[in-house]
Image (cartoon, rainbow, N blue to C red; front, side):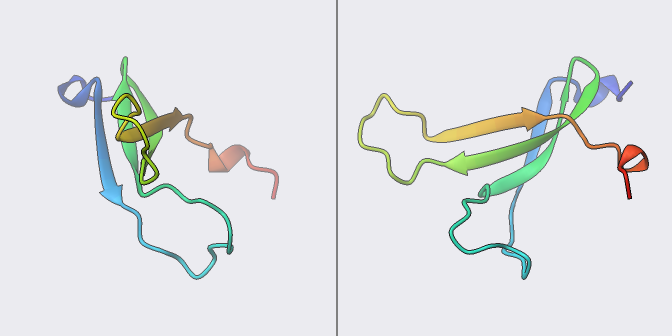
Length: 74
């Protein structure tokens, strides 16, 4: 269980382009971590640069589970 001090918070950092990035693939503008209900999750954020209406969100955030690298079949 994660530290309750940071429960229900998200921390994002601007993602830097990498040499392994593939052309034509949309990568998140921001990546980071979230602690929701005591569980740590990965967070990714995209800024809506093609916004056409004021009712559209300015940023979208997706939370996903951390991949356990110990269980990865290598």
